[in-house]
Image 1 (cartoon, rainbow, N blue to C red):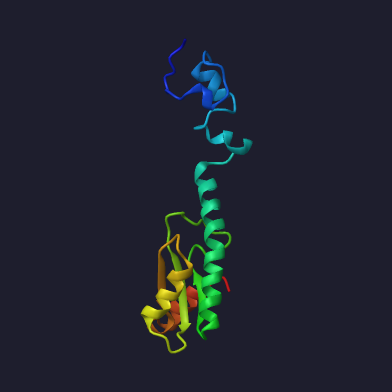
Image 2: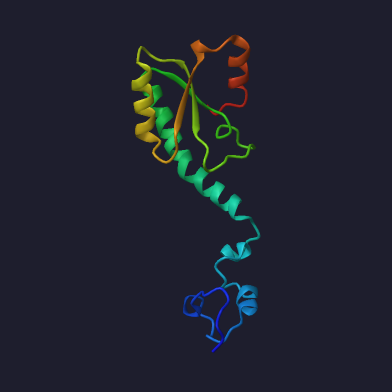
Length: 143
């Protein structure tokens, strides 16, 4: 029996034990080949990014609804808010708080964190920014 250079058990792939490593990689059973996932030719980075966006999007939308229902004016900003921008799966979620609705900074963060569990949350307060920076932050925001 051939010893696999990669020591990956063949029974997990459904391939015969005497399959060479090259044959295994060329088949779609090799788990580490980026092309083998669902037969699509995409990088693992793209797949991870799409997975994290799909996971985070409902959380961010729920957080925005919860904050707005308490009288706050809040928008998602940054790379997550721009649909055409690259969102790094290790990135944080930035929220622009334009009106706190009389709530403390800690209370706003607590409410946002209650809904957004799978990423760090950064709050940017509009009253701490000058007009030019505020305009820049509002560019391309997700409502």
